Length: 393
Length: 144
Ligand code: FES
Image (cartoon, rainbow over all chains, first blue to last red; front, side, top):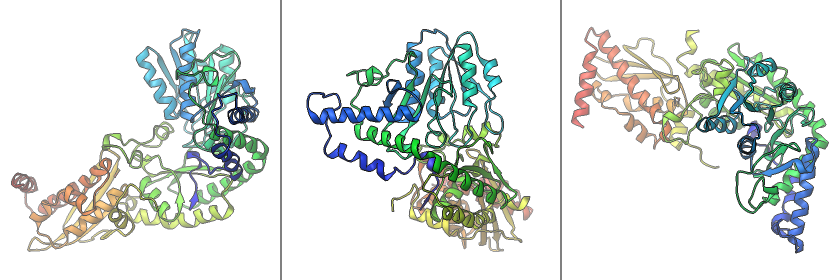
């Protein structure tokens, strides 16, 4: 199988897995147990990982809180910050293309009296920093705008958005889950107060993620209990996964300079190849400011789920934002909806239908891209022949 | 290999759809859209003088379940009388496919509706009132 759904999670690096194993077999102590070796070993390894993760994003170790996943980091950032905010403001700003874990979190806060502004994006998915400036109010408590969109690959002008917030004295959270390992992340250059990353998105294991909380920014934990993670997150830490995340951060910091240019090269090939293939294929997202190795598009006349299934049968794992494929395990059709991200960038919602995302990792090769380009014409042709819309053109 | 969300039968009809295409001299054509996801299914019928479905073809813009439902529907239709075609429910299609995920049942409903539309179009082309289809359908429902 050729794996092209790396925004959903990457294959863990073998060195990461190797580093994790002893924390299942030998150093299995609870890191809160400081008075015998296997507990202390677990604690020390976890703190070393904290150091690696901090240095990966140019933060201090004390500014890193480990969580279980990107969703938890985003929830902790938003709800934890608002719970503790000295700022009594009841206004939150996000973009209209945030991940569910930001979008649904702030939507629920409406019940608690918060008002939400969702900034529009242009048809390449970019938020205009001037729009943010105009949307800020006296009672704005928090701005949360993602760094990289997983569906359309667009990367925001995060540093500029951060500068706008700094100037206004408003806290700025960045969901950088789809960015880590693919773009350089420097929390100082990005002018952010909080930043979420997840290990599985940069060749680490599932089950470990982090929230950067800038020194001096007050956040309350969402889980009550034994005061682990300095109270930001009670509950026994997932030591093996955290150790893996640390190793993944170390590797990414050292080796991104090698894999990112290669991803940019393969991405250009895939983009140009697909673009030249059919005149009814339309790319989504920004061509220049995009996640390396990420190509997304929609095709007229054909539906995304059938495209996804057909590619899967031919051995390619991709993603689709079509309504049909949105929630196959749902209880009924009411839960099927075209991606709001695609609708926001102007893709007609019945067409979100034919949308497809291919996101590469450092493990993808020239052969992989040659193969995709080889099967796409026959696959699309086949589905077009089946489509009642195709002949009408 | 781990099983996907669809049965083997669905996958088989998705990969090898039966009766896919158009009938140029069809005497009944039905097209329906699916409001839930914007998809479209089109059915072409050839009904002979004895009111038997001689040939049927389909074209579908839709998900795997929609393609498999249309393909399976056409298999169940060939050789059947008009009243038998109308008695073909989406449930019968789902059963023949060894089931569909709950969120995908509406894709099979689209097939039942396309058959209905195609038969209305057939009666119209014969100079008859297409409303007979609704009457027949209502009668069948009552009998069951
Ligand atoms: S046709 Fe859209 S879900 Fe089946």
